[in-house]
Length: 201
Image (tube, rainbow, N blue to C red; front, side, top):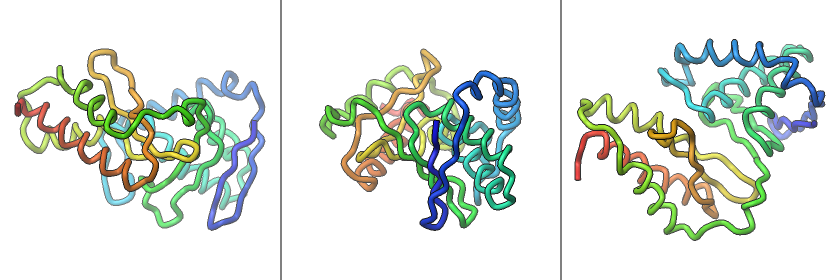
């Protein structure tokens, strides 16, 4: 497998052995345990990073490995990303220290048959119907931000993921044609999630 890492318009192609995900499973799990304790992502402390945020954190470690010419560590970080983001083609780490701005390009078969944008709002509404209430406004805002992932690139489109509280896994929102449109839909999703957590109807 090959992962393209784009740093200041320079493309690095990292070759990751096919069996690395299995061989390094313990190492990847240790990475996850470290991130379970929370992480400083740029200017913000994230208490419980979700899947996409964890990949952004690891992409920052990958950038450091490339800068230090640490090929072994770089390959391990690339292996983690490929294992956690199926279909990942390239990553563009943020070089200014704002980890949350790191971008991924993911190839997915559903790109050509993406649902129309209005369906995104309907899906968001369905995902938050059964959300628990009783939190303070600050707790609800922090939790809503954690349970709706940052916007990320998928092929030629953009999307975000929403945590399904009942199943405990992530549901991908329909693709948006532009990053701006995906960000607008994500903002609406966070707002809806926030209101659901507060029990606002």
